[in-house]
Length: 110
Image 1 (tube, rainbow, N blue to C red):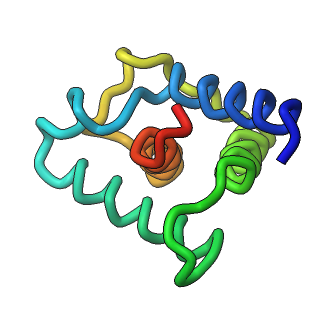
Image 2: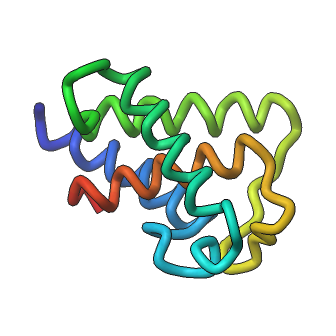
């Protein structure tokens, strides 16, 4: 993996991190079920990006994040900026984005 791909991938993941928050150690863990939902989404993302291969690679995870952001933007969705995210009403897309961030943090990419 070349240095430009690493920089671009990290930039994408940091942008997502700024929008939806970090590794699950903040307010999402205080709400019943939210942390569990993030964990379930993270497991699904691992399955999508490489069943049986463990943690997804940096570029694959960033590619997945870009796809989520592009799909959301096409639907007119504007991401809330953390810490202004109201996790008590978080939809599927927001939880999925948060799971990408959790994976990126857990694997040491961020």
